[in-house]
Structures are given as C-alpha cells and as structure tokens.
Length: 257
Image (tube, rainbow, N blue to C red; front, side):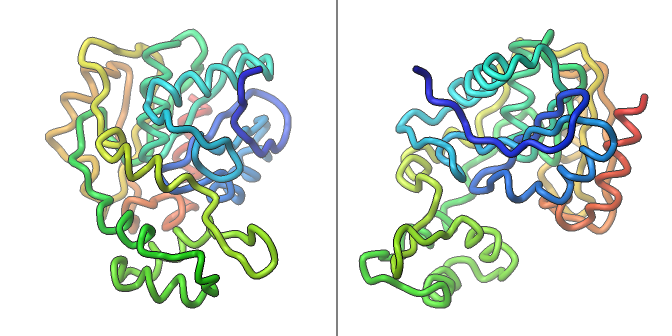
C-alpha cells in the first residue's frame, strides 16, 4: 500500500489543490483555503512528504513529490484540478503540470520561477539543527535558540508552527529535518529544460521579493507560453500571508477567465 500525503479538504465543486512551500504545511493556507471553497471549489490543502502530518521519507526530490500529488489525485478520483503552489510547492506544481498536463485545468505559481536557485536556507537549517530536544526545551527556549540564526521574528513564527507536543513535556518538529539537511540542493532545482505546459497559467510575484526577477520572464514564457505575471503589492516572498486580500482577488479573477 502506497503511503498517501495528508490533506485538509474544504468545500465542494471543482477540485483545487494547494501545495505549500519549504518548511510549511497545509495549515498555512487554511484561511485562504476556506475562502476559495466559498467560491465553489473543493479545496485540497496538502502536506507534502516530510512536512506537517505527512509521512517521512529519505527520498525527497521533486520527482517524488510530483508522484505524491498524482497518487493523491488518483486515490481521490480527481481527474483534473486547479493547482496552486507556493515556492517549493510552486516548483512541484510546475513539474506536475509539465508531466501531467491533462490533470491540470489551470496552474497558479506563487513567487518562484522555473530557474535554478542556489541553496539559501542554510542558516535556517543550522538554527533548526541547533535545537536539542533531549533537553526538553519550552517553546520560548526553542525561539531563543533559533533567534541566534534567524533574526526575523516572522520567519521564526512560521517555523515554530511546525512545533508540536510529541508527548507531555516533549516538543518536536513535525517536519523531517534530516531529509531537508541531506537534500539542500534539491529545493532550488530548475524545471527540466525541454518541458512545457500549454495551459492557462498565472505567476504571482511579491513586489518586495526577488524570487521572480525580470530576467526570469523569458524563461517563464518558454516553459509556460500561455502565462501571465501579476505583482502583489506590499508583499514579499510570503505574499499570500502578507497581502491575502490582493492574492485572493487575483487568483479568483484568473479562475473566472
């Protein structure tokens, strides 16, 4: 029996898959997921492998994650879906669309381009690795250790959403930190050069983020010829959390086309 990724499902109607970013989980999308459901969609917020409540595995590649999405759709008899992915989830969404175009009705990619990105999570991974859970730290103590590596309190709050009580008095992270440390190169991998998706595609870029740059626009059109790029004002890389109102309205506008 294949292991299946965990999901939260809201609403009914046309299938709509949401794939979170690196170190995130489906919970990050709960508020927006409910709003999309109110627009007449059956929204499936997935925990990618090694994240949230999904299974842990030493295998952690985009090929594996794309297969997880396909297995999930097959198991839930979803012939076709709107697919939205943010950051790492955007890479999964892009690769899924070019691999199984007939399964994607529309594609939405949030603040990531098809190009290769150099590893840039080293400090975060070092901070997470510095936490010794055998000492039974409190949440405040975990935050204190992390703050030496991750000065931005918003990023620390995001990371600490994955903390949970393994048992009374014992905290741990839901994600599989070892797999992430062992696979740092994987996260930034480029979309295979020869692959493209002809379907309707929306790229959303945070105005204060440098993840999608003007130099990326030609590459985006090469892989996704039927795509448009929209900037979300007053938002960085976590554009859906920093400006959810504009993010939501741009997605809904695109889905109505």
